[in-house]
Amino acid sequence: MNSPSLYQLISVPLAVSLSWTLLFHESGRADPFAEPETWARYDVGHDGDPSNDFVLQPGPPGSWDAWCYYPSVVNVAGVYRMWYTGWDGSQTRIGLATSVNGAVWTKYDVGSDGDHSNDYLIQGYGASVLHDGGLYRMWYGSPSTLDMKYAESPDGITWTEHGTVLERGGLGAWDSSDCSWGSVVKDGAAYRMWYGGRGPSTSYSIGYAVSVDGIHWEKYDVGSNTNPADDMVLGAGPAGAWDSQGVNDPTVVRLGNEWHMWYQGWQAPGQPIRIGHATSADGVSWVKYDRFADADSSNDFVLDVGVSGAWDHDYVWSPWVLAEGTTVRMWYTGWSDTNPGRQIGYAAIGVIPEPFSIAFIGSAFVGVVAYRFRRRRRHGGK
Ligand SMILES: [Ca+2]
Ligand SMILES: [Ca+2]
Ligand SMILES: [Ca+2]
Ligand SMILES: [Ca+2]
Image (cartoon, rainbow, N blue to C red; front, side):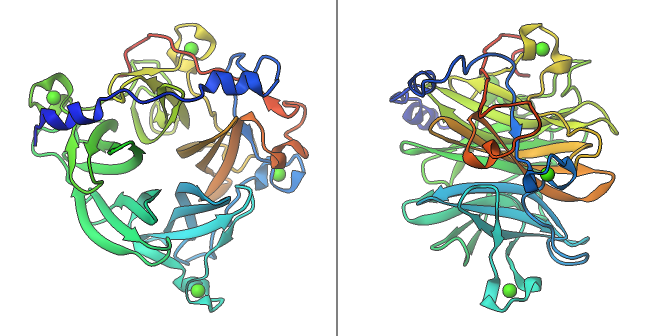
């Protein structure tokens, strides 16, 4: 599986068209890069009430999507399509919802029968979908084998499964117990995947694989030592860090000449799960964002849990990010013990789209959210 030629093939530097910085300057906004990176949550109902701010309604109790989580979103011709995971208490399946603004979603009615009980498309969890060459292509977790399967669809609705394309590592590998939670990006002639995994005695970390066709993948060998124990490219932070116990569920986009990853991290059982951000020039060496530039890694998450009473007061995780012009959008999973299902929320940064500016969260923002993607060398992303 170790083919240097494959890496040589995809290591050609990307052409950088219009830089992210330039886009913001051309937008005419004042100081859009001030710290800290601050995401605006969408206020469902425009009522200032954070208890109702999930954008995808869960199905009825016992239904296939009584929990809704792990969103993957693409924008095709101005319509957002979200594949999300549903849970009925015993199994995970993937369904589809559509939206024209990212905030108001309509679930796809399989069979056009008004019956929601059959509205799932495929067994699995944690989809990553690309619209690629007229096809929808999905990489997703296999509930039975905890590795990565692949499926194709002409319309995003009817899927043909092709089985496992990324297997768990062997004995001693960092990802010998779980190898899923992917984010696949097409980059010229190459496909790049960042994915979550763990071993029997290791916490979740994030690895990297490349492919020329999206089907045959080669895991990246960190250290070029043929040792799969050290092949994670982003790991838990040091003691005291907000993500000291593990990281998972990456979503990766390219902005300017850098890769940007948002991911979930956590400190300890019972502590919040939050969302953080890292950047990389090559997809392998990642630098975690140092919020407030204070070399203190306890505060480096970029999306904190919601306020008391919010629908997402206890955990926020599984981000999915789309960068579109001067707006970066995030859909994410949230949970609170007063709202015990799993639901999907929506946040944005940059030039905030219209749904946010109508009646945004108190006085926190006035149309534009200031932020900055800083690069601070800290603990090397591992
Ligand atoms: Ca609200
Ligand atoms: Ca139906
Ligand atoms: Ca290695
Ligand atoms: Ca910090």
